[in-house]
Image 1 (spheres, one colour):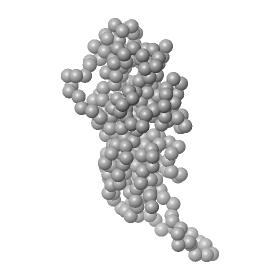
Image 2 (image 1 turned 30 degrees about the horizontal axis):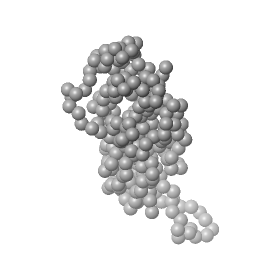
Image 3 (image 1 turned 30 degrees about the vertical axis):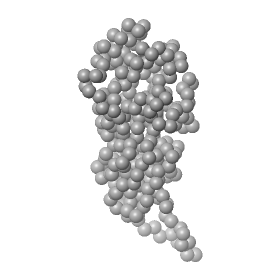
Length: 250
């Protein structure tokens, strides 16, 4: 029987940062009457592919994708990306990725099996696989403390899973598609389930219960920190909504 493992990505409070100027083009609109003194031009948002996929339906209207370090951002008011792309400024905080097991049903109700699964999700290994996103381990650990793939496979076999342990992971974070390959050497067959837009933050799916407000306590294990970088046109103020999404404020 497959059981459910989940990862949630939670955003910390963010602060604004400096950026290079990207002037808006002048747009002349014929009109029989003067424009209102309060009229403002539409703002142009651009997100890296990973950021675009992560925020999804929460993105501002008209948001487009761009390739960091490649696409010209001269016509963009604010650009957002994960990692530390050239020409962008990293915010003081980061996307924090945590791991939480569903210990209400087998096999993860067995504390021995659950502990082996946690050991398979090694922050140093996962951060290295997501290095292009600027990921770093959320906690430091000595290299000799990490369990080897062979030792974990043997331990899982002794716990009753000689032919690998099947698990389902509900993941909403950048680079999630790489996780099955990362844990495969440790004797885990991981199947990814993409949460719906309505449940992406609470991670409600099947036996999965609602998420927590912080990636600590209540069974949460902090894994990674992924930087969030922005590039904002000079003169614009940035605010962050409850999900951590950068927006132009007043």
